[in-house]
Length: 148
Image: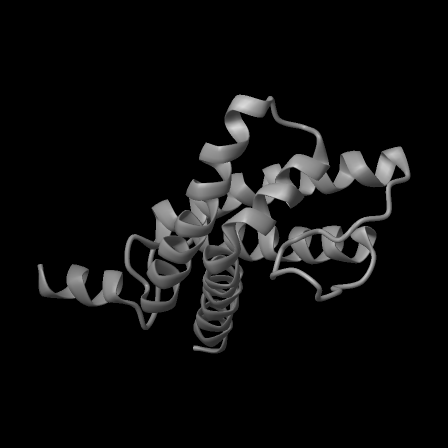
C-alpha cells in the first residue's frame, strides 16, 4: 500500500510538472521559440514545429499522467522528452553557457542549469518507475482494466 501511494505521488508530480510547463509556454510561443533557438541545437527548419508541438505535448502528457490514462505511453513519451531536455542542458553545461532553461516560462529563474538537470534526472527516474510498473494504482487505467 505504501509503495502504491508513492507511485501515485510520482505520477501526480510528473504529470503536474509537465502540465505546468506546457501551460506557461502556450501563451508565450514566440518567447519559447527564442529559447529553443538559443540552445542552438536544432536546424532552423525544426524550431517552429518543436516550438509549437512541445508545449501541447507536455500538456497532454501531464493530463494523462494526472488522471492515470495511457500511463505507460505517457511515461514513455515523458522519458523521451526528459532525455532530450537533459541532453540539451548537458550540452550547454559542457559549453559553459549560463542561460535560463525556459522550462517554466520566461523571466523566472529555476537556478543553475546543473540544478535543472538534476531535477530532470529525478523526474526521469519517476517516469521509469511508472513505466515498468504493470499495475498503476488509483488511475483511470486501473479502473478501466477492472471494468473490462
